[in-house]
Length: 369
Image (cartoon, rainbow, N blue to C red; front, side, top):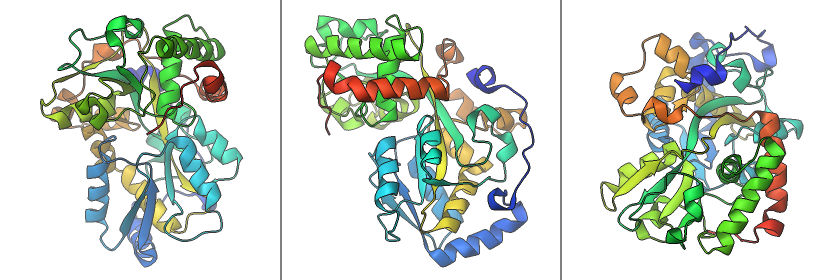
């Protein structure tokens, strides 16, 4: 799998300090009691059809009864999540998120700003070193690649590349699954288009991506709304650029109505890692830690895989023979990922700064719900 190329490296054993110590399995019962006393876990930006989160949340509630899961704004972007933490620093009410699921580049930003608290899960050593903060402030959870979801009831010729999207036959058809001024998924979409159009480094790819969408918008091919499963099904956005795990789940949800196809573009394949973190101001810190323990357990990791996300412990689970064959068989063919590139944090930060800062001036399309 591509994971072996992207993250293969020996993971050193990090000293477990008291403030960031992993919970031993024998301590989980005590953690559960502390979390149950808090009574609630507040999440944000977790759509049920994203990465299998519907079943993951249900699994957590079934395993740990007595903890209410309060779900805030499932359609929020990574920037929105950080703003929710900032806005609720002095608020212990239900609008203050305990945990975050954000794009890789947002992790270091949130740590630097003091928005996160450190915590190392029991399976910490099986998270590749390249995908986690060594102090435990954020850690990779899953990854996917950018793909196109195409409503083939409306689109007769399926685009196979970024370049294809510029063709006149795709007028009023193409949308991003987020606002590129706030959403990591959308930012990476612009970046991916840039890599396919002459970008050789983060800044040039970001600028090439902005130029690509400027042209797409000028031609009338770009639809300035946040693309979702419903907009694809309804024909408002017959083509949406999104992570493969999202569009595969959306396609399955259509059950053939409409007919749809998922395409990994041939001219640029961008892989993206998301990360988990606990708010520094979490009103329910023990519930937040228990949630992390669940997500990084075998059960939680396989729950993500069932939702088409490659969990961060994929290699370890595979080596231990813990991945059911039916889950492996449900994944897209491995060759679809052969060209995948994993932008570093530095590259993502550089691209994000250009794209978020220049979208309005260069593209001039106000992406809305």
